[in-house]
Length: 109
Picture (cartoon, rainbow, N blue to C red):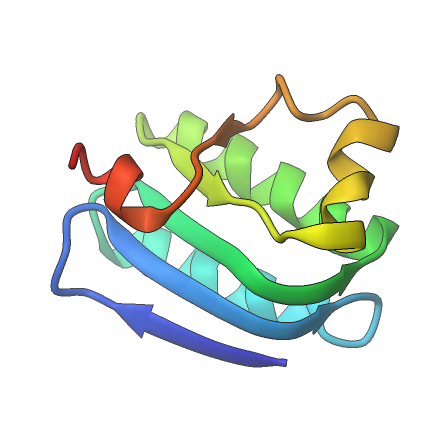
C-alpha cells in the first residue's frame, strides 16, 4: 500500500494505492489519525486506486470517520471502483460514509 497526503487543500486529501487489509490498515490509521490531530479535523480519503478492502480496512475507515466527527470534522471517501467497492454495499455502510465520486467533488468543484 502506498499513502500520499496533500496538505495543499482544505480538507486535506489522502490518496491510497494498493490493498487496504489487515496488514496495511494500521499504517493508514496511524497516518490519518496524526493528520486529523494536527489539522482542522476533516479529510478526504481517496480510495479510487485501491484494489481490495477487507473488514480490517473497513474498520479503520469507520474508526477514522468517528474520530473526525468527534473533532467536529468530516471524513469524505472517494470509493474504489470494481469489486473493491462491493464491501460498502455488502456491509451497508454506503450511507454511513460521506461518499463522493472524486476528490474534486468533495472540494466543492
